Length: 330
Ligand code: TRP
Ligand code: SF4
Image 1: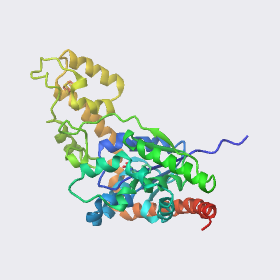
Image 2: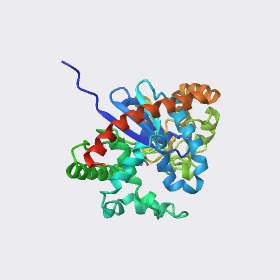
Image 3: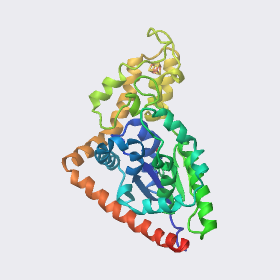
Image 4: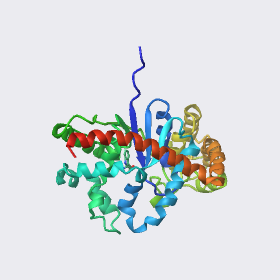
């Protein structure tokens, strides 16, 4: 009996700069797990970055390098998966164009992220054709590999909903070319940034993977903890402590629960408690830092790996596009 064919995974990351711990727990930790079990395509989505950063486009190429270096240093392995740059695989653009013929405008206008993101990024004009089409381009990213599974956070669920609707419409209008992609919801532990708000690059509160051990200590040590703990002898509540979100993400469960119990009976000081999270993060990142140093010394290695991924992605996407053109009759 032959083993059942591996299911295909596609996910994407916008190149917006070096990755932080929030990106790691929100996405990349899963990507690492999935590459062992699935046929994975991981895309650095340059064109998606351009939909909001079109006035700042020159930075994007450096960010592609940053993200690719982050992923390879974390252990994303080109022997196990395909890591590539979306803008080097023109098939995504062709499919986006063809899908634009069949997607009713209201389907795009009602995707909640369209209005939300416009409001969030009110400093720029995002009333563009490209920005409206963001989730349609994402649909093309996914289905051009006939992906079965798409690991994303809750905020992307509406985009996957749209992708499935478009697949049904295409398959009905032309021919059953595409499977309906399923959402693999990533359990994302909420990570606080250094100011206690959600960790985000735009808030300036992020701990970056490429930060040094000293920088990580300097960022976490002054963080506000549960405000009940004015004095060392005041008991606290880890659930109300932003620092403890780091423990939840990085400290092994037994150690973490012991600390939580100690916090609740004032049996541990915040400095000592923070030191445990700091050490866990340093242990996690030490192999990453070693690999990153090697890539930074030899950036050609990163670009060559991407180029190889681009070629493999092109081959897969190209095969789908032959079917697509045939189904439509162009
Ligand atoms: N919109 C996704 C995000 O903001 C990025 C993305 C683009 C993506 N294309 C994708 C994610 C395809 C999954 C699949 O995170
Ligand atoms: Fe937070 Fe730890 Fe201090 Fe408790 S002991 S408030 S969990 S840092």
